[in-house]
Length: 219
Image 1: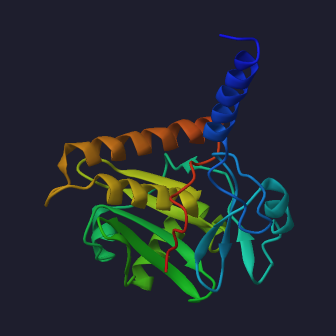
Image 2 (image 1 turned 135 degrees about the vertical axis):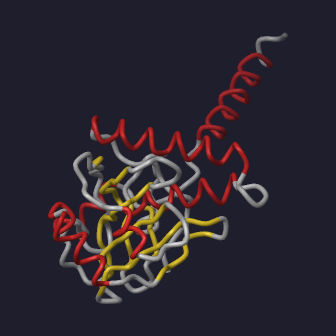
C-alpha cells in the first residue's frame, strides 16, 4: 500500500464509522440530535408523544402549559397497593394488563389495555375507580396526561406501578412487535416478563424509562 493510499483508506474507514454512529432521531421541536434515551413531551390536543432534547424538554417542565407537557422520569413499584379481584373485575377489562391516566382533554380518568393491534381504550366504571383511589392515595399524586397507573395481573401476577406514560407505550410496542398467533407465542411473554423486571430495577435505581416507538400516541 502506497503512502498516498493509506491516509485515503483510513479516512474512508473513519467516515463509515461516523456514519454508522450517527443519531437516528432528531428533536421534534428544534431538530437537535437525540441520544437513545431522551425526554418526551405529550401534545395535549392530539395525545401524541413528542421526542425532544433536554433543552426543549426543560421549556415545558411547567405542568400548566396548555400545549405540551413533559413526561416525568419517576417509576414506582407499588408494593403495598390494595386491589381485590372483585374490584379488578368490576372494571370490566378484557385482559390482565391495563394502564390508567388522568386525561385533561377528556376530563376524566382513561383506561387503556395493550393488544396486538395497539393500545385500546376501555370504558371505565368511575364508581369502581373511585373506590380503588380511596384505598390507594398514592394515585392521587399521578400527574395528568404524563403519568399512568400500570397494572399487571397476567396469570398469578399482582403487580402495580406508577410510571411515565411513555413506559406504557414501550409495553404496547413490545406486544405489537412480538405477538404471534392466537396466544402470542412464548417470545412475547418472555419479552413482557423482561419489561416488568426492568421496571422493578428502574424503580429501585431511579433510571429513566426506555423510549417508545417513535410517533406513538394514546389516541
